[in-house]
Length: 159
Image 1 (cartoon, helix red, strand yellow):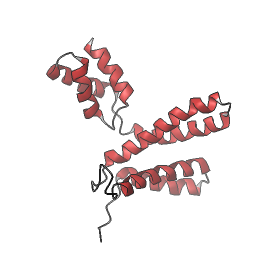
Image 2: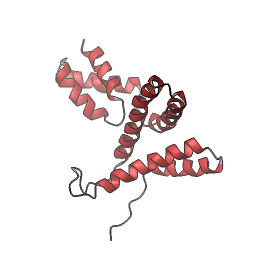
Image 3: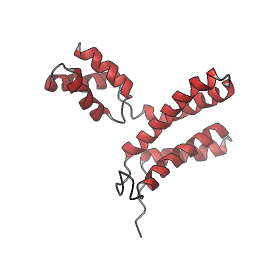
Image 4: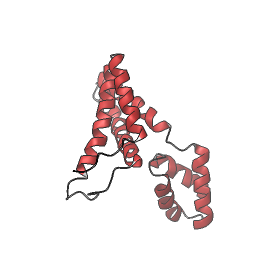
C-alpha cells in the first residue's frame, strides 16, 4: 500500500481554518475552505488515472497554490456574470469566497519589487524582446504571481 504523504503547510492551514470556521459557525468560510481542500484532493486523485497527463506525479505545494488560483479565477469570472443576470446575492457570495481564497495566496505571491527584479534579470539575459522574455517570466513566476500582472510588467519593462 502507498504510504500516506505529509500534508503541505497550505493544507495544514486550510484544515486548521476549517476547524476554526466550524467553531465560529461561519458557514460560507467553512464551505469555501472545504471546497478548496476538496479541489486539491481531486487533483491528487486525478493523478492516479493512467489517462491523466500528470499521471503518477506527486502533488507539490505549487500544485496546491495553482488549484487555489484556479478557484479564485473561477470566482472572478462568475461575479460579473451574476451581476449581469441580476443575482447580486450570488455575486456577493462569490466575492466573499474569492476574498477568503485570496488570503491564502497573498502570502505566497511575489511583491511588485520582487517581480520587477526577476523580469529585469530576464531582460538582461534575453534582450528587450517581449516574445523572448514573457515565456521565461511566466515559467519563473508560475504560482507566485498572476499571469496578467506579469504580462503588464514585462510590457512595461521591455519598452
